Length: 531
Image 1 (cartoon, rainbow, N blue to C red):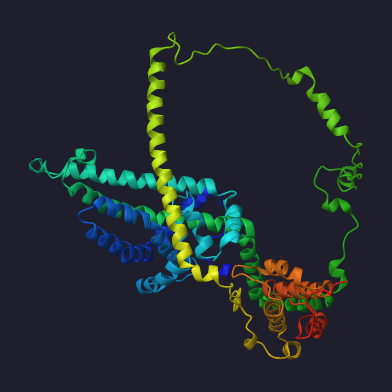
Image 2: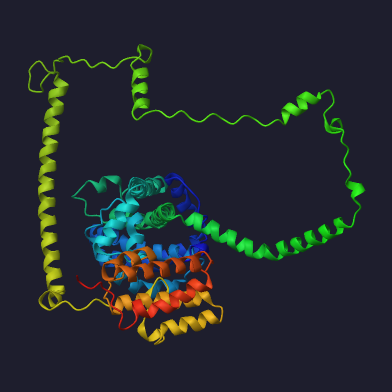
C-alpha cells in the first residue's frame, strides 16, 4: 500500500474526531459517492418497490436487508478516492460483479447482518481480503479500541433514519390541504384493518431518501475509524513523515552543496585578512555589564558542581515506606460495615400497590418476550438448517472429492513471484544488476526469487494480505537455521533499501548474491535434515 498517496491527513485523532473525519470525507467526495449510490441503490429500490407493489412491507424489508451490498459500493468509491482516484458511474458498474463475488457478501447478509460494527469491519473483507481465522483475528485487533465507537455510530445512524422518515410524514401531513384527510393518516400504521397502501408506499419512498442521506456518512465514518485504527497500529503517520523528510532532504541537497562551497570560499578569504584585525583586548571588563563586579562575572561562568548520585534503596524498601506513609491517620482510613435492611416483597400485602402492579406488568411483558423469543429461535433454527443444506448442496463436490491444491499466488505486495518472471540463474542476474549500480533491483530480484522458491519448492502458504513480517513467520518452520539466517539478512537489506532508501554496502550485497544459490537454488534443502 502506497500510503504516501493518501489524500487524508494522517495524524493522531481520538475516535470522536475520527467520526467527524468521515463527514469531511463525504463533504469532499459527495459527487462521486452520491452518483455511485444513485446508479446502484435507487434502481434496485425502485425495482423492488414495483415488484412488491401490493406488499410494500415486504419490499421495505428486502431493500433494508440488502443494504450491505450497497455499502460495498460506497466503500469502493471511498477507498479509491483516498488514493486520488474518483471512479465514474461506469467504473462502479464494472466493479459490482467483483464486489458481489469476493467480499464475503453472503456472510454479511446472514451472520453479520445485525453486527453493530459492520461498517468498521467491512474493509477487512473488502480491502484486505481476509478470510476465516485471519479475518477474526484481524477484527479482534482492530476492535480492541474501536468497536464501541462503531457500535454507537450504527445506533445513531439507524435512529436518524427513523427520525427522518417520521419527520417526513409529519411534514407531509402539515402541508396537506384539509380536503385530503382521507389520503392517509398516522392511524394507518397501527390499524391492521386499513386496506389503503398509500402510507406504506410513501414510507418506503421516505426510507429510500433517508438512506440516501445517512448511509454514505455511515460507511465513510466506519472507513475513517478503520483508517485511524490502522494508522495507530502500523504508524502510518510516522512513515509518511519520514518519507516527506527524505523527499525534502533530496530536494535541498543541491542548496546544501552550494552553501558548503560558499563556506569554503569565505574561509579562504578570511585567511587573507591580517591577524591584527582580530586582536582582542585583555581587559575582561569591556564585556562585563555595567555595575557588575569581576567576582560576580567569574562566579556566573564558574563550573557548577556535579550532581550527587541517586540514592539506591534495597528491594522492597520503597513499597514499605509508601505503605507506612499511607497508614498515617492524616490520609484517612478504610472501614467496611455490614447491616441488615428490610426489603418488601412484591406479593406481600403490605407492599405498595404501585409495586404490585409494576411486577404484574413486568410478568406479562416477560411472557410476551418469551413467546417472541421462541418464534425467533424457531426461525433462526430453520434458517441455519436451510443454510446448512444449501452449503452442502453447493459444495458437495468439495466434500466428497479430495481437496484440490490451493491456488499458488502470483503477486505478493506488488512483487511478481511467478517462476516464468524470474531468470534461470538469479544469483548471476543479481550480480549483473549490482555491477551496473542498481542495488535496489538486485535485492528485489533476490527477494522475489526467495519467495518464489518458498512457494513452489517448500509449499509455503502465503496469503494476499501478508506483510514482510508475516512472510518471515511463515518461512521459519520450513527452513534450516543457516538458511533462516540468510533469509533474515536478505529481508533486512530489502526493507532498508525499499523503504529507507539505504541499501547496504556493496560487499554485503555481493555476499547475498553469492549465497542465494546455496539456500534457495534448485538443489538447496530448505528443511533441516533430521538428526
